[in-house]
Length: 541
Image: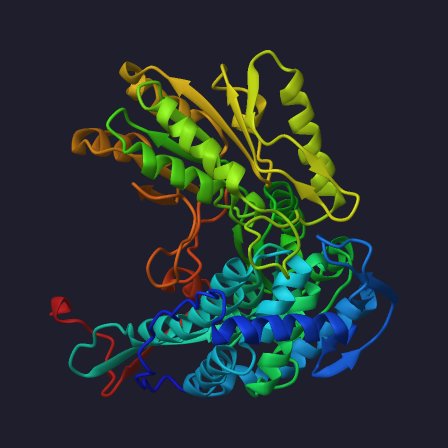
């Protein structure tokens, strides 16, 4: 394992393509969509570099076209988890001792492959299986994943450069070892970039990985695996499997070589995982690293001085882009009564202008929610809001799952700042607003801070610098990503490292050196050139 430091290419954020009508990239993406839908992809697991088709063969259907089969995958079992761990441990020795710049080169190549020949293949897979419009797919499965690959190499370089001081006659140095054991990556449906980053960030630091994606994201996960293989990732470094979460947990968390988990998903699941790891702590060679980003109940709070157009636009985008299925999506807002009429008019006008439908129609701003379980949950909250005297639906409120899982973007106005949809995470296109009197700004900040167990993202809008300072101080622990006069979504790698605390996770900041350092185990080495040959110190006389 080499600690020689080479300067990698400068990491720059990947430019976002517009997909405006008639553009060359628009034609490319539409062709890729057509080809992907026609392909009927048969998706194996990848264990030790081999394609594995064990277990039950299951259909893949787009959320916006639930009666259409576009491919199949193979549901694995506990034996596949065990084989994946064996493959990861077998690959570990050679991968860990590979000079770090050789590992880095693979992921830089993966970034270039995704920039070029794989861009539209991964974008189209994300649009089809996760029901994203072209812009949402582009900023996720292309730009953010490219940025993760490139910036993680830069952050690894910065970490390896951190070395201790050495006095005359000695040389102190830090060796950044991978963790002892394998890393388990458990990834969500909503961001293809997260699915690619969680296993690869650990691998860049010399770890080998067992990766289980959400079943709703397997279609695009397989394309990521194609990119890894095309970039030259050795067999067994990242092993992609599709068992149930419980089967993975039963095998991984009881295994002596379990070294850590990289997780994005629900708070409840993460808490269960933490508990299971704790109960098995005596079984492991080392204390496992537990890194997780979980839920959010993200807020927008406007001051009486706020620009009403900026607030309304932030709500329209922040609450409803990708059907509100971002962990950072605005789901509760606090608007002062002096600007509320104008905010309301613009927000309602904007939401009514949204088009909703299939991803192949690029004029659709809204697509489907991910599955029937999510659809039914959201429909239940909307129905309850229609009947509750404390709430009023001012736009939206309809839903239909006859063809796909379509929920209209819905805005609820409540008289109760602790109304259920102001407190509970919904993960869908439902925004709840509480209108308050301008003189209660400070009181509102306290309510914002205390309403939710989460602390992922939040935004304030104000043109008064004193109120901005006050909100920044009072909400210091309310959000790991805090926005001033901007929506609470859209964190960019290298610009806004992402993660929250409280019930929202361990705040290890994906897209930063903070995250990568969690996948290294430093060894301090002191070499003395002329060691003492007598135990006596001068004070002994």
